Length: 316
Image 1 (spheres, one colour):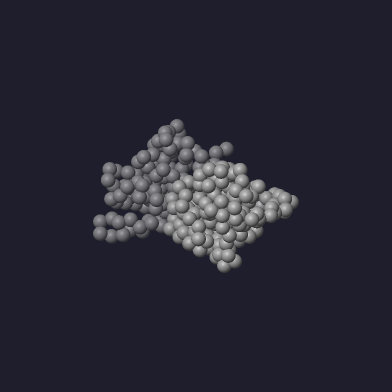
Image 2 (spheres, helix red, strand yellow; image 1 turned 45 degrees about the vertical axis):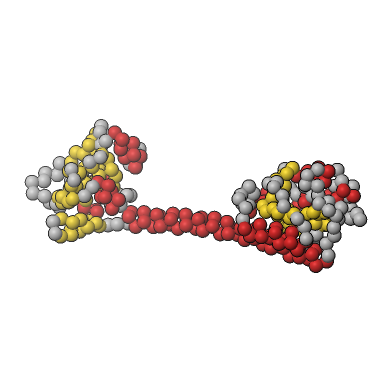
């Protein structure tokens, strides 16, 4: 018994409508060329069982090949697309059944019919996504002619919908994970931005000296000097030497107001009165230290810091 060919214009129209987008849609499911998965193997096995066939496939078609996500009774992983029964079946819109491929002019010369695995019977249900894209088929095959009952055809439709449902869940999970990572990235950016804004808005810091915490207004701080394992904070009123590192101080001081000019020095930008060669002259006005003459403080500028410092100054 032969199944009449579908009208060529209908097939051609369906292929023209869906084919350009279909291969582009398939990679979004991230399923090709991966290891077998139990859920798809089970659905293929159940398809063979309900159809009474020794072979069944979850078959996906990209632009050039037919690849088997799950298979029963076949050792092949893929085959050229031009040999695939599924490329016709998935465009049929419903279960396509070929009772005897050797007696069907469309498939009689197919190498899968004339040689191993010697297919005679084929029944395939299209895998149609919620967006209307055809990904492949769930199919049952046999080496002898046969015909499905109405109940078997309906079971194959149901199982095909289950395959598509699991593919859709895979795609949705991947999209949710991508969105989660994007959201986490945005949150990190927002947190970093908030922290930077907070750091830039600080007007005071606390430093530990002996057994007490001392409040230092950043507006009073002229520069910071490293002395071995200690740092000295030079303010307009006093000098405070504390245990710590320049890196610690650099992260605590508002970045918009201070700049590292040397491996041993951090200066407040609005205290720079002049730059002479590789030296910054810091204004010491407003100081109240005993013996302070008001002469500018000379702070060396490291060669690796000079370009960055000059870039932050309003040069004319």
